Amino acid sequence: MRYHRAVAGRASAQAALETRRSIVRAAADLTSVEGLESVSIGRLASILEMSKSGVIGQFGSKENLQLATVELVFAVFVERVWEPVRHLEPGLPRLLGVCRSWVTYAADPPYPGGCPVDQMTYDVDGRTGAVHDRLAEGRAQWRRTLVREVRRAVEAGDLPPSTDPEQVVFALRAIVSGITPSRALDGDAPLEQWALTAIRAVLGLPPQR
Amino acid sequence: MRYHRAVAGRASAQAALETRRSIVRAAADLTSVEGLESVSIGRLASILEMSKSGVIGQFGSKENLQLATVELVFAVFVERVWEPVRHLEPGLPRLLGVCRSWVTYAADPPYPGGCPVDQMTYDVDGRTGAVHDRLAEGRAQWRRTLVREVRRAVEAGDLPPSTDPEQVVFALRAIVSGITPSRALDGDAPLEQWALTAIRAVLGLPPQR
DNA sequence: CCTACCGATCGGTAGG
DNA sequence: CCTACCGATCGGTAGG
Image (cartoon, rainbow over all chains, first blue to last red):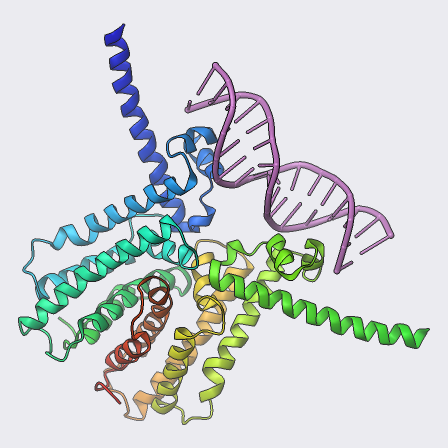
């Protein structure tokens, strides 16, 4: 009986973890399409064919569910954008690699909608609270990573010495983030190519590659 | 009595128009801060110290109120960004003028939050309906205006003949739209200057001015 | 423009 | 993980 309960305990703890993952994943997908505000506990319950208390019980509050969703979309971002290129040589080679994987991620995101990080940024930008703070923190970390990479490229002589890393990183983020709304509202266009062309321009590199 | 009623009729029609304007203005302000989804009839009623039926009665439905809000923010955009420079010489002079007024509008918007057009773009990009369609239409019109201006600048020899007007306009829109989220979440920075620097880069113009 | 009301949905809790 | 429920708020309507 103790054994049985222990096994059942492990099995059900595992099942609970899987349920938790499926809830967060559904929340991320729904956020990518309709935004954070549309992700209600009732809608998730309906999508996942669970009760509302089954959805919220895993997290205790909607805010905790949102925080878990933020962590998931950050992890996916790192896995898709940073991991594939982290082995490249620091400086311009890795910076250009990041830009390519980043643009690919934005143009063909692993969600039914656009990048949930950008969506959430708009959803929380006028508010306060833990979700806003965690999102700002993650964005700041990504910004610092990019600034460091630009700085290395300048020091290596691969970018003009007049380069302002902070300015360039602002431009890079804007250009990549511009892909999602264009894709959703402006009709078909070679957005990936347009973005890469713009990126080379703000880096002060000659066109093409 | 007929006269009195006629006067009262005019006066109250005017009052109704003013009420209508104040509702739409409050909706635009609230949209700029919290997004379209947070603009409920009840919240507007509370802000304006009216009854809910007084708010919605002017429009018949929430969708019509949203459409009226879209028209207002488009009108404000044209007034702030296009009108100040429409007298400039078509081509590069007017294009640079537009970029300046546009960046100023984004960096110091006439709303308590950021530009409602960008906010609404994220709010409706995963949906269908009249608000989505009107927003897409307005965005397309602005895009065509910019493309025309870039094309003129190329034809006048003020921009490189290799310029792809559609690509450049994608980049311009992304850069200006990047100001709002940065302002809200990334802390103090010379965003206006960064944006103008990036704009010159994607236009293929030398730095500074 | 108002009061009074409709059914639906919201986040969350009690109790199991 | 469930059912059953809470008060609050949603968009909208009836009737004036």
